Image (cartoon, rainbow, N blue to C red; front, side, top):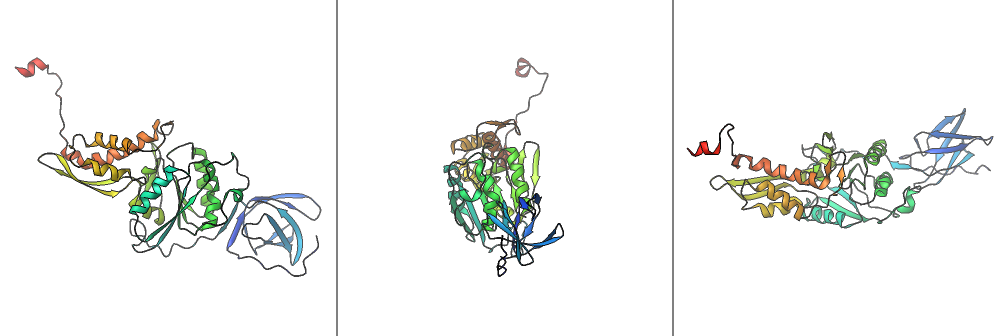
Length: 359
């Protein structure tokens, strides 16, 4: 390969790539390597200094040896991403982001499940938030070799991604979507384990951690709080990211403020402190007024099913139960915590027969 007359201009050094790629040296011997490199970055290999040059969506990479072409590599860049933008414009206020800061959200949907989430978020999110939606495809191959074949030409810049798509192929695309949008955090909902199996969820967390993108995978989605989320009955995962915490301040694990009449022990008002992402908590709150404190939990469970909850009905090993039932119990417990002081508890004294008590 002839050396170029002029060294081509280097791309921005803010872009990084990491992949297993094949290098062919001047003797035709194949070499394999995995290392992070950036455009314009010079590395020493076999006592030869080379410079890495590539574009944003490059599939062919050229190494230059001090101004002359040294080797041609063919590769598909798995991770090409910008350096993370600093979080300095976000100041933690306990719940997340300072009031008044704009948070740009990109939601990924491909079914009514995700569209219902988006509709509820749009209706009740703070006015400082912006929400864009990418309508993804319904089907993807079992293995995605070339992510760019399934991604749009461009996506709007964002701070937070909400992955509501119902296909596991979308989880495999998230690292590339993060690169295209420059996001700093991802919430990948697991309301159906077929969409994001346990193994793929672990891989996704590893992929995004490599590119300094925070990620949570709440199972179910309504287990997400401002400090942690559930992945199984016995495992809660803590996180510390102001963007995710800001979202979870308004949407996630349902939280209510319930007022009960102490004389009649009936619910007189229900305020939704934190809604479920799908809007189920607000639906339940509207129908709980007038209910007895004794019946509030049971009625909440019925309202949760009638909304309806669209979490999967297949039994998952992590809970030995269905995600729909787990989600329903989360909401029942939230209501039960508020009305427990007003519930009438009947005690049974052992050792007494019914005829003895009548005498």
